[in-house]
Length: 449
Image: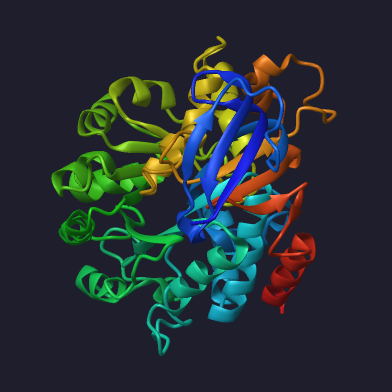
């Protein structure tokens, strides 16, 4: 067993910032773990790798659509709604192949590593070739994402997504044919071939209540239950979805999911924006999580979800960058608090520590990595370091590092990212993808033709 010692100038240990913390970690593959944590070590031990700044547990991006990164900038021209944005998104999806998706996702996941993200929940529904014909390997697109994460040095939970209809009682349109397996049973048969790996876990997703007929929701839920796998679902992102669900079923989307056994402690609702009080109680009482994606929700003019009420009801909070308008989990954490301040005109709904837990431990739990997200013995050796001497972070006392990280720092302040005990980002440079901006530019250009 190979061990490495890291000396952390300052470390956030879940409730407080400690100066001079020494971690001993194993570095045998992706399963490298923290074997010892020593505080009160004011100077680095001989041979230790020194990480200056504030070290946090690795951040978990609990909701990602990797190919949406190709939309950055292009969808900011003119006006519109979520539904007009969706048409542009479909046109990008039409141009994806396993090879172009691998190149794009590798670059996107490398961008995430540069932002301190060590694990991603990839909500994956572009399964087949345009027109709906399966590839020779029916999971070629999903396997491209798993490979991309390995090549970028981060962990992934592939949330293989059932997407079967264009709306309540509507067949998939021509864009959506490549998303659909036809039935939930066919979806389950295809994704049952996917296997966990050291850096990858397989989960499930219901795209939305409009995209999976009510009578087939239980099939997806049962598949996840049998495997003890995470199950995610876009929930009440748009009022139009709520209205259509009421027209078709006489109930809200949350109530429909509850009726068919989808809610529960391994389930996470993504967005959860337009909920009734009864919906909030259903999610909280069942232990269903909530993944907030504030930068996307504001970019798409979705609205501000009831995150405070959901957490009080018993719904654990996690964070995602979703459409990748930006990739910055610190901004997602900050935005959740600041959005609530705008809505209520009061301050201090979450402490910095609570927001960091949503971005780390609770995010990892939401995507099935319960053994990550903390700087403690036995946890996966995944962590990231924020510089405390940049133009954004210089000045505050180091003991206020958590507050500085959440309310002042950005992804640009990440100096180191370690996954499985091994450096993926060192001094702001990615160790596996030498030129991430070029990789992103080339991958996006390939999709433009």
